[in-house]
Length: 283
View 1: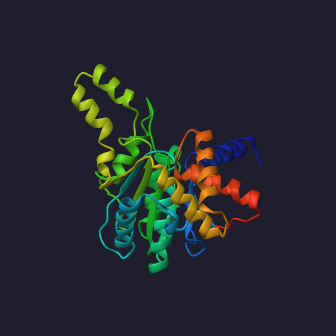
View 2: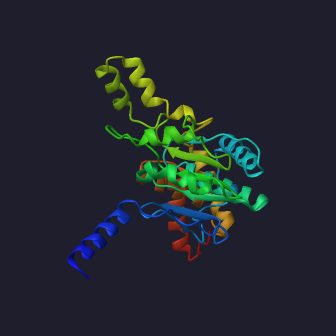
View 3: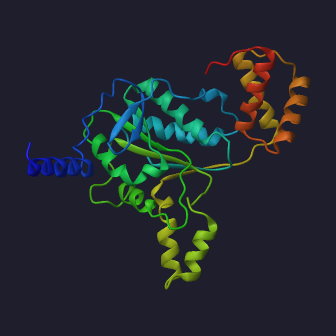
């Protein structure tokens, strides 16, 4: 190979790295859930999703029923809304999304869950292009979605959720969880008001992303009774033998040491209790 040929080969390889060929259609029969990984674009099958059963989610009845109805409509081929689950940490937002997918897919067999990480949001247009012509329905899910100062990724999401020329594919729905109702910190919004030439327009541009979600489901801190009910539900489900008096005393001490009450803290207590009692936990 001559020196000129070697240079041409290196240039061709560099161009392929910059603009890789389109990803081949994945085998959606390989799993019910996938993780999106860009550059190179691919969908990685998840053989077993980390989730809990719907019946173990306590204290979120209204949000549970609303999201389940929306998900079932979509899985059956009917119109449905993008959903934003926002609010208190550890109260079952992502668990509810995964449980709703499991129940809807059990009924229809045609719903696939696609997880996209927040940092990969700029590539969501390519993901939707890959899903558009498939004969299945897809629930694209982003956990803990939020945007910080100088983060423009939200513009990519706005375009594909509602308003882009191609629009969101009819067979794709987008669910996101966040601790922030408007997906952006309050000081970021207030800073836009104070520095922009037209404060109202700047603020609208920042918060309009959340308007792309037809469903807003709020999750609030649980009460102590709900916290104890969560733990009792787990204990009954996994066969952990503990009387109510001992459960209450140990659970209250646990949450006081953590300084918080939530579904996540309840599950952490159950893991500790099961370990002490020698009971395996198999979700």
